[in-house]
Length: 465
Ligand SMILES: Nc1ncnc2c1ncn2[C@@H]1O[C@H](COP(=O)(O)OP(=O)(O)OP(=O)(O)O)[C@@H](O)[C@H]1O
Ligand SMILES: [Mg+2]
Image (cartoon, rainbow, N blue to C red; front, side, top):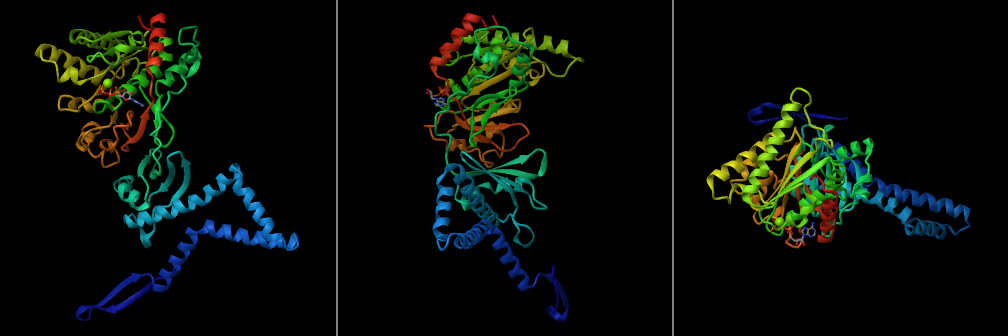
């Protein structure tokens, strides 16, 4: 590498030394970078030229025709067209990424941009694997994501850290809205999925169902992958304005639990103070409470179960493993604020708040978890927020509410829940402890017919009663 050491006269005759590349070196670097950026197109042109020469020699002057036919076949057949066009598209994406990084000043020495290691097409756009430049951290890219998206002229850019390598990130570049279509629920997993009414379940199936509790399929993510919700050892908070689709998140979760319920590994205790959501599928639940006093009893019983288990597990095991003898208890609460904000009797209110706080702070390890929905993240609910490791925010009416639910800075990192149109119920952003990037998702829509069917099955088999 040529460096020119310049010696020049500074003010008052002092000699100044500067170490910088010469003009020819800068021009050479720029030229090499250009060629490198266009290498796919140049390779294509070179290949075409070689093909024309070879075909011209072999086919007695019909070279162009032969090459045109080969190209038409290559581009006409989907099996070959997709990889060929995808290969060129990846080159365009890399250039666009480099341009955007320069515009957002995410550059290193000699305006080098964070290199793209791979480009993968997904239904919403592309996922880039990007290596950070020395001195950069994932947060630098995250902060610039809106500027990157605007420069790349795409819908959004979101940056996800790689837990295995802090110097690498995954960048989801979204070209099109994929969550505007209704999401139908995924087929239920395992043999129990096909025989919810009962039937013998082997030890291997039980182990599979227990493992499945860490990844319940409840919808789809923006990148087209399934939205997997962990529930064992995790409380889940779902917030959203009225009509935002909280019911579909609750029902997708409950539906995904039904194979484990049928096998006796899970019991769902439902709390439905509004009487409009969960009461509809009462047969599914081991317990259902709608009146405030019944709700207080239910929560107290959950605390008692939790304490009994904690005593047994203490010093033996750190985490509860659900078994038919001691299933995972999932307390589903349709409107948490009904327990914390709207109860007028102070004694009852204290009792409800105390039980909820104990469950949320100590219930995870002994296998008593809470899935709670809330319309308005007001101050009574707010102190509980941090006790929910998984938080989902659906459509909100004000930008400020997003950070109230997900934690400060979440909206800046891409969770624009206030911009979700009212016509897209079930669409929202999920944040899981340990990953600062919100993921856009849509919950599957469980129809009333299916809820009724599940309730009938639950009634017949007596899930948990
Ligand atoms: N995931 C979804 N996909 C498609 N449509 C949905 C979805 N979720 C909900 N809907 C539709 O949106 C309407 C409102 O949804 P839902 O009742 O779940 O809202 P909510 O957030 O529970 O409102 P509230 O706070 O008033 O109870 C439902 O009637 C349903 O038809
Ligand atoms: Mg509701």
